[in-house]
Amino acid sequence: MCGIIGFTGSGDAREIILDGLKRLEYRGYDSAGIAIQNKNEIDMVKAQGKVDNLISLSNKNNKLDGHCGIGHTRWATHGVPSDVNAHPHMSTDGKFAIVHNGIIENYAEIKSKLIEKGVKFLSETDTEVIVQLLDYYYDGDLKKTLVKTTSMLEGSYAIGVLCADYPGTIFAAKVASPLIIGVGVGENYFASDITAFVSRTKNVIDLDDYEFAEITKDKVTIFDHNFKEIKKEERKITWDVAAAEKSGYEHFMLKEIMEQPAALKATIEPRVKDGKVNFDELGIDIKKYDRILITACGSAYYAGCVGRDVIEKLCRIHVHTEVASELRYRDPIIDEKTLVLVISQSGETADTIAAIKEVQSKGADVVAIVNVVGSTIAKLANYTIYTWAGPEIAVATTKGYTTQVAVLYMFAVWAAFKLGRIDENKMEEYTSNIVSLPERAQRTLDLNTRVKKLADKYHEKQSIFFIGRYLDYAVCLEGSLKLKEISYIHSEAYAAGELKHGTIALIEKGRLVVSVCCYEPLLDKIISNIQQVKARGAQVLALAIEGNKKIFSEADDVLLVPKANELFMAAVEIIPLQLFAYYVAKNNKCDIDKPKNLAKSVTVE
Ligand code: AGP
Image (cartoon, rainbow, N blue to C red; front, side, top):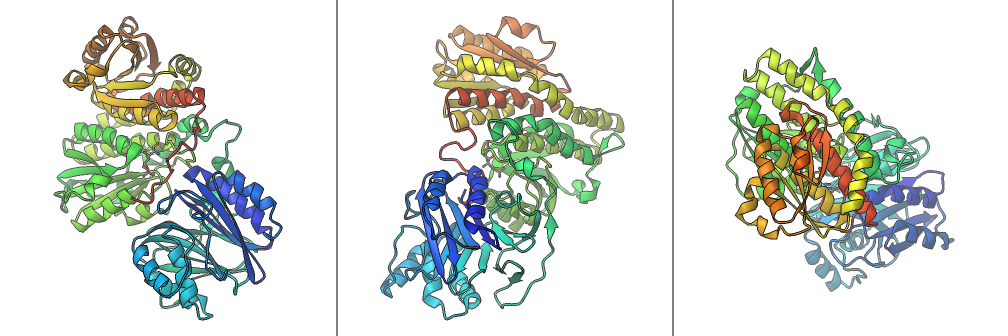
């Protein structure tokens, strides 16, 4: 969703901030803007549409000349996407400019009070109340005014502020919306995520909720609402800037699909000791719990569906899954004997954060499976397991999902061993299946050319169904989401056995049904579902396991993936479906990395 960058140093602020905004494009946005401080003046340019529009407008504006400024990419929440509603927002007298991520829930109330006092508003945004409040209360001491202003805000915010009276200084504050500070040599930054400035510095400080930052080119001062200085540790980003660049690939999505063997290896290897999965260092007393609840959103939830089936099968403990956006409002029955697994690539998904707070308030312990180090979810959880996928830029998750599934496999095997449900031999056998994932993922990527051809054949379909049973059904959910979110083709995933309870009415001549047949104990069942849809004229693209000869006489097209224990297939069988979605979207000339209406990290409800 919205992206923020702030810079102060000796370099050309316009160039550095525009470069940062380009790097934040992946988050999803509809307008962008920049404000630069030049001595005691602030100049601003905003534009609806792509950052490239903003770049060409900025290049025509000679006044955007300075060494300190803020920039923003906006994903509209209050007010349509437009030049006026784009950030930064300025106070009427031009003294303040701010950028904001999040939602100010009491903005209408504040706005009407300020209007009564004669303040004029230009935009329809909730954000503008912050800058007008700053201006209204300002008495020459910006730190004091910032604390007073933010104390009036309800909701979530990460804000970056420029004040004409403070040349060379940028200010920041946050509650429930991410903001990090980049510490360079003779220059410093703030941003909504590291990608904005990782090409310039890898040293970061995490700003926590209710903290404020005053940043000059040589100094970062963090303080609380009593103006007490807070000492914060710096941490170093381990990934290289190339990880956040396309490195010759046409799209980030394709690059990230291809990175999956390496991402799986990085996620699995540190957790395997002497041929056995080991999560002991987390200190989780697994015997304490009588049930497990898995919650997340979107693809992370679908990874959780795979996890549910494998954990329940191996641990013989009841596992329930629920999307976080429902769980948070449902008053679920949860207590201290419930272990809640929360899954999130970004670690910043608003509904998932709310679900954590809900279950923790009922006494449950939370294990977070998260990719972004230091993210809100990683910090809120009682235990955190990182997926080491590296930065994921494409809105459609790929390596994020497969590494989540790998962690869930490892958790299942480790927990089953701790609970005495499997013996040492089984533990070693299952671990070796998990350890073989990177190599199996690599071999599956060899299907690339063949999948591309199938996408050429099928990309004009108006509607595509995915069917599977048990673990294959969980994979269908993700395969179907991948296709619809980037190609805009209508798609649905069905538990194959449910077809005849209604959906089969939609099967007609030429309908494409992608049939996932990798859970071999149920092969005969899915084959009979294939026969049912074929009998009604459907075309079938089947995904099955190497060595399956039977499937060729049933399906129109077949893709085969490398064999392993049937419980540990999902992380590999999703790969051809990711490639299929990618090439269908490419054929249809879609904006693959930044699909319409979607954002990488859904930080508002
Ligand atoms: C997947 O391709 C989507 N971009 C989306 O469903 C995503 O998985 C979901 O929003 C959850 O995000 P998170 O993993 O960052 O919490």
